[in-house]
Amino acid sequence: MLEFIKPAVNSPSTGVLGIMHVRNEMLRMEGVLDHHRRLGVEEFLVVDNGSTDGTREYLEAQPDVNLFFSEQPYSQGKYGLDATNALLNRHGEGRWCLTIDADEYFVYPHCENKRLPLFVKYLERQGAEAVLTILLDMYSARSIAETEPEPGRSLWQVCPHFDGDPYSCSKADLFPFVQIVGGPRRRVFWDRGSSVPPPTVNKVPLVKWRKGYRYASSTHFLKPGPARLAEVSGALLHFKFLSDFHHRAAHEAERQEHFHGAREYKKYIEKLAETPSLSLFYEGSRKYNKSTDLVQVGLIQNSPAWSFFL
Image 1 (tube, rainbow, N blue to C red):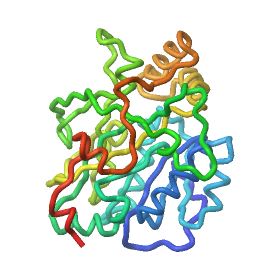
Image 2: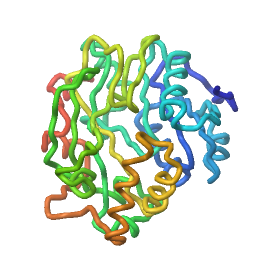
Image 3: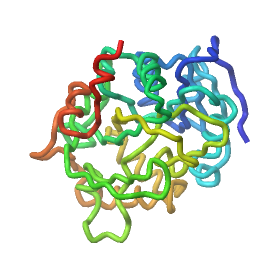
Image 4: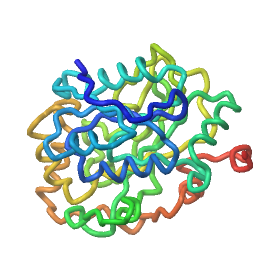
């Protein structure tokens, strides 16, 4: 059950709505809100799941945040999806909704100078109802343990590197009917012969919401699927690999509240035990400066219609 803690000071009935489910994310919270405010998100719905690091108190002080509290164990609420889907169906119907984690920054072609209100206007004009993204794990050139956020610098400046390839795509039964795997987690933490599949790195975070939609498996899949996926795609820059990663991986492996008894986190701590100074940087690493870098390597898709849309 969700407990309503406090409303946003202003609650617009239009505009892009941001949705998050968080727990102990104080290291990333200010950055993720500021990034999406700059993009044009005017209002957030945030569920706090028992934070003890000051996250809840910080969110209570944010004027654009509608704050909710859930004491339900993460695993018992379909890993946060029960709360997320309930909020989307209660408050998101008919609106463009951006559902993200606290360590994800949404980007799309030309996002540096074309804000979300213009982007969703373009999507409406095209008849699109959802935007596919790749979850792009970002990392620094240093070891994970030494990768500290820096005051005044965006996380993508602290962790500017990503894997440009290889990624593999296969058919999926649920919308968007594709499943993508790859990136540094597969490269570093997954043995090719492992019986445990590597993490899925496709998501559908931006959706023109209709009552009755439901996310399945985080925001990787959606059912029933919208009628039309946008031809322009984006990325979620994923900032998991900061200096708190070792502690968080061990903590989540012990809590076993994540998918399949936190088996992904158990693989992380096995590798970290072997190599405490692990770095994800390698000779094939690429550097992110702006969204066109991702277009050029084929990780996100642009279109001439969007480039010239005003």
